Image (cartoon, rainbow, N blue to C red; front, side, top):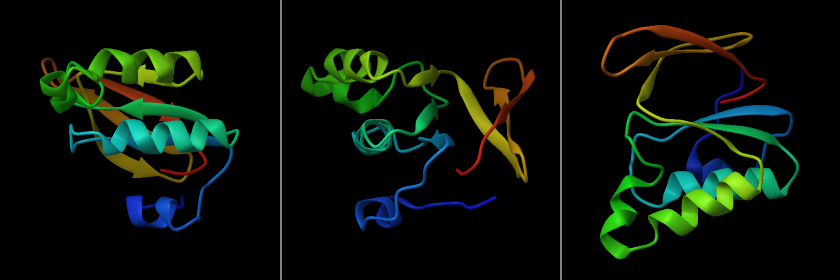
Amino acid sequence: MPVYTPDDLMGGKVPSGNIVLFDDDHYYMGGVLAELMARRGAKVTLVTPSAYVSDWTRNTLEQGAIHRRLAELGVDIVLNRSVTNIASGGVVTACVYTGARQELSADAV
């Protein structure tokens, strides 16, 4: 399973297909990268352990607009979950509160 960094994506190496983006930064980058891949035709699932996409941007009053834009682009938003395992067919996530696991299929992370 290919794993891409923000530098890869911003450098033009943008994956296609079913992509899981894990955002543990909580600032703006996760939303920016999800939007970039969605606009290029990828099916994006954004996973974050936070209760909000790009959580820190609540401080700059941008969070609602970011979440709305991603939803309009068809990005699946998975909140309150961490990625615990990356395997050949996808990722395993766990709820930050209960530890309940969920598998998500993906072509790249």
